[in-house]
Structure formats: C-alpha cells, structure tokens
Length: 339
Figure 1: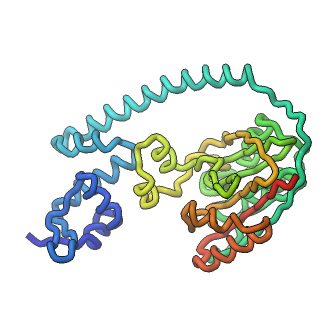
Figure 2: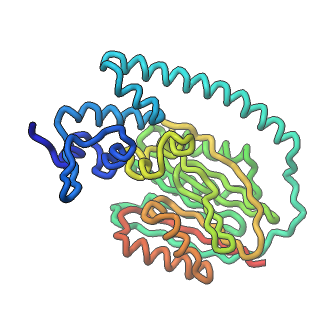
Figure 3: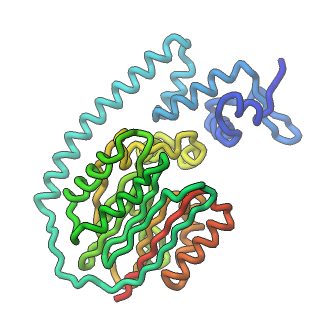
C-alpha cells in the first residue's frame, strides 16, 4: 500500500499538517503508519474521505464525541446524523432565545444609564498603515470622546471611510438605538454583498466607556498590565470556539477563520453589539483592526501595548507589524485615561 506524507495528505484533504496532528491526538484520525525513528506520520489515500468529513463536521460545530459516532456509521447514514444534530442545535437555540429575552428584559428594568462622574482626561495616539495591499480600506475616527476603527473589504467604494464620515456628523453621546440606525444606514448604501466593513468604536462619557462593535476589529482594555479583549469577533469560527465546539488551536488553523457572520454589509446581520465598561485612571483602551491583532498572540500584543504612553505603544506596535511583514491594511488607536 502506497502511503502519503503528512504534507501531501494535508494538501489533498484541504487541511494543514497541524490540523492532522490535532485529529491524531484526539484519536479521530490515526495515521496509517508512524516512522519509529523520526515520528513522521504517513496516511493512506483511502483515509482522505474520513479526513474531509471530520473537517466538514467541525466547521458546522459538531462536538468531537458526536463526530466519533458519525465516523462509525455507514456512509449513507451520516446525512441523517448531521440532520439530527442540526435539528437539536436549532431547538437549543430556540430555548436559549426565550431565556435570553427574559434575561434582557429583567436587566433593562434594573439598569441605569446615568453617570455622575466627570469624563476623565485622555491622551490619544493612532496609526494607519497600507501594508502590502494596493489600496487603503481601513479607516480611523478620532474625536474628543469618540474613537473608532473600521476595516473595509471588497474594494471601492471604501465602506470603512463612509462609516467614519457618518460618525463625524454625530452628536454625542450615541445611544444603542442610534448605533443600530447608523449601521443600518451605512449598510443600506453598499448595494451588494461583496463590499462591506467591520467597525469598533469607543465612546467615553463620565467613567463609562461604551463600545459599539460589528465584525472582527477589536476593543481591548489594558489595566494593571493585564490585557483583556472587550469585544467578541463576529466570525463563524469565533462562535464555535465560544460554544466549546472548536478548540483555540483548531480555530487558528480553520480555513474559514476570517469569515464574518456580522458586518456592515447587505449580506449579513448589521446589528452591532453595544456594551459598556467602567474606566479609571491608568487604564488604556485600545482599538485594532485584524491587520494588527491577527499577527500576534495575545501575550505578544500585550507586551507591545504596555509601553509607557500611548504614543510609544502605537510606535512599538507599528514597528512589530512592519517586522512581521505587514501583509494587510492595519489600524490602531490607543487611549490613555489620565485623570
């Protein structure tokens, strides 16, 4: 029996060698043979169907144990197993929706939007880079108490630029309802699913920072040397990780890891997340597009952002992006809370 190297098998299966090693470690797909001297893995051509099926089932979020069940079934029965899995997933979502709506109603009946704290002083630095792209589709918005980044896709017209133009005309503060309308207004101008943009914005009023977010740009809080991501990426893969259906390692290797399921485009949901967090002196708020954070682990990004002030943090991050080859447009905004 002729065997394939792990590299050749990975290419034929549309996977990566690292993904195959993960499937081996999880006992989902063992190599046909392992060289005892060097540990190299080799696969048979008749394992390709199983490899492709595992990858497809993980893409739709099927748990590992259920994948093991599916792999043991006759091929004709796998479709029925996937159908059963998805029907249960939809039923679970309907149940969760009822609970979520009840929880939101309860929380909104108790929340107060008033703040008596004085809006603190800030020091802001930002940068915007073209990278290896032919045109600039990232954009930034810098105002007294409103900062945003946007990452466009699909070429001209640059939706990211149009969105920051809309922000420039907005009075402060912007309510959650107004964020919804702004996103809908911008998406309505696009006219097609091929063009769009992410956006992540921070508005500061008193000691409350309100974050509005759509897509996979990110807002961060650096406090006492600890970096915390405030937003959740609106991607297919991020949703699966959050639900525990994909590991972080699988997510980094996933072929659809950049596929957005919410953005400023007519083809997806345009309802932004609007969340809030309190800030205090010494905090550092950060906005990045994926041309920045996709290049670094969270620990690496944290090290760059702990520079002494906003200007130094931006300079260090941009230098690191350049050193990493700056393959994409990239934008960063750093806001230091000073008093």
